[in-house]
Length: 407
Image: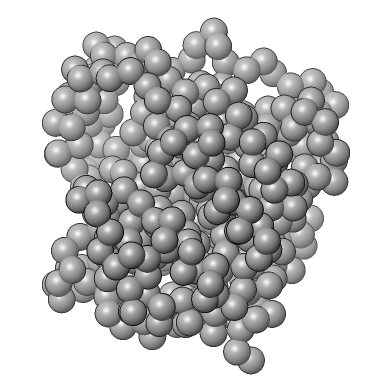
């Protein structure tokens, strides 16, 4: 879920506090490192295009606000995941579609370039069976996904081009309604189509034909209903939460959770604080952040000097208007444990929304991932259960999409 671009930054500041979760026991850390771990929603491709930023170097979440890089993936035991081509919602015009298409294609090329320039550490994955062999070599797994199908314009056949680039998961909408589907958070607070549009139904059929997993995150509940009724393969929520824990439009209720699971689908739990629990208003911070974000856009061409200037302004906002009521690791686990209680470990996974707004106190970047394994063990889940949660479930859904495609 991208919301802005500030050095690939999350919208929320992530400052160390005494409430951070304790380090995990060595035995748990070693177990975590042995597991095949995938995150189904990495917004890190936005960082790849930042001036002077390298995926090869270790960065500090408290310095440049980025959350994923190769050294930290190794420390946190993250084998890889689905690297998102995110495009912010723009006007539903020919020019808007063209600009979004070009931006999305270039972002896809940035992901492919990351792999091509460091084949010793990254490898493109195109099928479910690719993940384990790649991890066994010590390389990071790179699946590609689309967040917001807006760049496809009104030509669903363009999805084949993205499939050829490597896309294997695609969402429909983002913050606002688009040509394909209603968003769960459209500013109008009114549906446009009451689910998928006619064009959206064509897009779903093309996903099924190609073997691309349909992603319902960010789309409305009615879109999820349509996907469950029409998709020939299971549906994924790449980064979502539970309404029973916090009643937010981006989360889904237990009835939809059960319906998703009944058809083989999976909810991947996010760690976007504003969707985990309510927080107290912080008007001074919100005003300052809005002014700062007004100076940039997702496709901004920042010079190193301009990036440094914006980082300095962001850090000053954190100093002057710190967040005092942030979501915590316990809040994240409340959503995960609820989903597990409702649908069990065969239908829950992990998509934390790194570099797109995800991250909470105690779960601030990928280095903290072993804490999730530790918490699940403490909650009584077996190693086999946790392996499903970390990668088995999402790979099963991907395999089902592959098996269901037109040969």
